[in-house]
Amino acid sequence: MSNSSSITQFLLLAFADTWELQLLHFWLFLGIYLAALLGNSLIIGAVACDHHLHTPMYFFLFNLSLLDLGFISTTVPKAMANSLWDTRAISYPGCAAQLFLFLFLMSAEYFLLTVMAYDRYVAICKPLHYGTLLGSRACVHMAAAAWGCGFLNAVLHTASTFSLPLCKGNAVDQFFCEVPQILKLACSDAYLREVGVLVVSVCLGFGCFVFILLSYVQIFRAVLRIASKQGQHKVFSTCLPHLAVVSLFISTGSFAYLKPPSISSPSLDLLVAVLYSVVPPALNPLIYSMRNHEIKDALTKLMTGCFLEVINCLLSSA
Image (cartoon, rainbow, N blue to C red; front, side, top):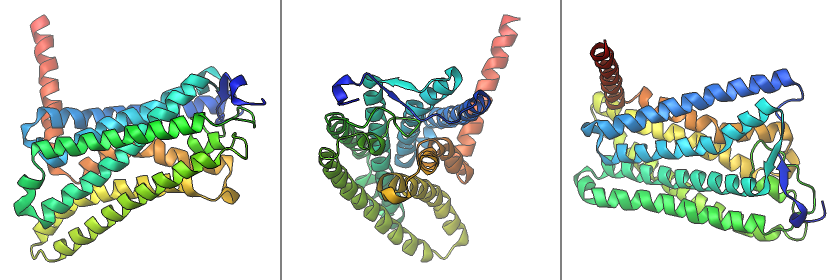
């Protein structure tokens, strides 16, 4: 294809050449997707229904679960449909919409993780000022800022990427529409504009990373000054899950967007994309609930309440 005006659809990367392997990928992605839906929905329900969890930390966790639901729903259902129906096609508008939603939700999640690091810093290092610095209005403003910054970042990149002339065909070497893969299709003298926008986003992302890093340096210094082992365990139970989520998200996402072209290959790109776009939304509920007794208690109450409601409905209908 000579230019982008003649492109009506893109061809995504096929997981395998045989129908059996494509079906295997479908069932694998379906299992991960259902686990992500169930886990994040349970956290959303627990935080919404249990008034003991109406605190800043769980308010941000509620927003994170919403972002994770949208994040994994942007890419995985289309990949499953392509595997099931043995096709690679995605329309030009569909690709643009997928890229926009993916960037929006990924950026908003990263900004929200930065806000959550600030929440933990204030809770542990400045506990007397926690109610003042993180009141309900401040929490809503910070969450809205994370969503808004993600939206603006997505608009900027989507507009910049899809305004480029595409001279190198329409085959995207990824199972979803991704900026680095679209740039590979751009004319060699036109992609530098989007690279400039990408550099600005990388600098902003690096600033957030430094903020998170400094926050946790201060947190761990404060933890080491706690004499009580029980107190240290309580702090670690709330901080380590967040640190694990941040580490997985930043390391895999940074590698996907910043790795040198010399080490790029379809199989490596696919593996890294799965690690930062599919795995975190599925693992986040498990990571946050594994060491958190309040979440476990709320989930137990929620599931017990649902079970009793079902029993009451069955008895009343009988």
